[in-house]
Image 1 (spheres, rainbow over the protein chains, first blue to last red):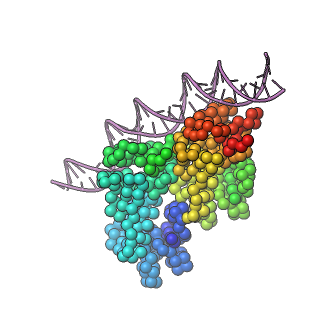
Image 2: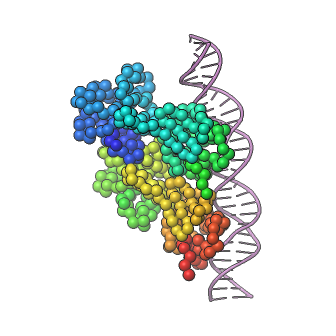
Image 3: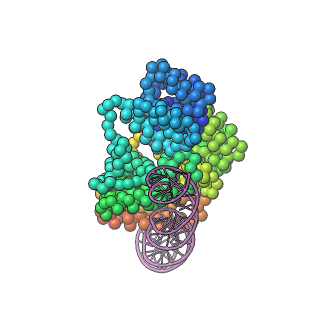
Length: 229
Length: 229
DNA sequence: AGCAGTCCGACAGGTTCCCGACAGCTTTCG
DNA sequence: CGAAAGCTGTCGGGAACCTGTCGGACTGCT
C-alpha cells in the first residue's frame, strides 16, 4: 500500500509516514503543494493524507489539480481544530474523510484503512476484529462479548481496538498512550490503567468468569488474548 | 548491522558500543549532536541510540535534522529518570522506542532488535527463543516449559532471556549481573543466585524431573541447555 | 575435616497496579 | 439557551506483588 503524506510541518508528516511504514506500507512525504503534485505523479500513491493549511497552493488547490490530472486517488484531509471544518465536510464525498489536528495516530490509520476498503469498490468487506469471544465491527462500531452487546465510550473503544489489533502482543502503557491519544497529550500514563479498568468492568459484566480477557503483564503492559495454558 | 550511539558521557556511549560489537555489530559513538549528524552522514547507521540530554543541539534537535536530511533511520532514545518525562510522551509512536537511564544493556539490545525487526517491513517475524523444551516469545511474553505456561517476574524474565540467548555458553554471575541489571547497580552478586533459584523452582514445578534446565557450573557460572551426559 | 562456593527461607522496603471519588469539559436534550 | 447527562483525566489510598539483604544450611572438592 502506497501513501503520500502532505504537511508543511515535517515532524507531523514524518510521524504519519513512520507509523504507516510500521504497518508495512510504503510512504513518502511532501512539505509543500508543489512537491506533493510532483510526487503524486512519480510515486502513484494509493491514498493521500493532505493538510489543508499549506503555504502557497493550499490543500483544496492540491486536490483540484490532482483531480484535474485525472487521479481518483482517495484523500484524507487534516485540518486545524477551529479551521474550515464545514467546508471540508462538503468535500468528504466518495469515501474520502478528514481528521482534526491534533489527532491520534491509530485513528488516522483506522480511517485510512476504511477509506481504502470503501474505495475498493462495491464489494468491500466488513472489517471485524475477533479475539476470543470478543468481536468488534469497525463499520457499525458494534462490540460484542459473546452475545452481549457492549456500550463503550470513544476512548474505551479506541483502546480496545488497539489491543485487539495488536493481539497477542503485549503493549506497554507508553505505547497505548502514544498510539491512542492525540500527539502532544501531556497526561500521565495512569489514564491507561483507568481506561483498562473501566473496560474490564464492562467486559466482565458481560460474560463468563474465566480468565480475564485483558491481562496485565506486570512490569510490561497489557495484552488481550484468550487464556491458554 | 550498523549502530550509531550518541551520548555526551563517553563511558555510556562506549558501554553500548562495546556490547553491540560483541554481538557482531558495527558501532560508532558520538559525544555531541554535531558529531552525531556528521557521522550519520558518513556511517549510514541502520539504527541510532540517542541521548536526549546533549549539550548544544539536544536530542530532539538531532532527530529533527536527521529527518530533515531524509534519513528514516529508527531511533531509540535515552532519557534521565526525572528529566523530560513529559516530553518523552510520543516517542514510541512510530515504532521508535525509549529507555530510562540507568538502563540494563540487555534490555537496550532487546529493544534495538525489536525496533529493527519491526522496521524491516511487513514480513516481520515473531521472535521465539527455544532451548530444550523451553520457549520464550518476546512479543507475547509467553514463556512455556513444554505445554505449561510460566508466570515470571520481570527480573526472572530478563535473566532467563539472557541465558537462553547465550545458550549453550556458560555465563558467570558477574556477566549476568552486568548485562541484566542496570549499570551502576551496587548489589551483591548473590542476587543472581537468588533469581536463578526462583527460576529453577518455577521451571521444575512445571515439568519433568530429568536434569535441571539451568545447570550450575561450579566456580564458573550458569548455563541453560539440554541435559547431555 | 575443612573450606569455598552455592542454595534458598524469611523478611522488609519499595514499586506497580487497581479503582473509588470527584471536577472540568463536551455533547445532548428539552 | 440552559440544564442534564455523559465522558475524561487527576488524585490518592490500599492491596498485591517484586526485589534485595541477611544468614544458616548444604554441597562438592581437596
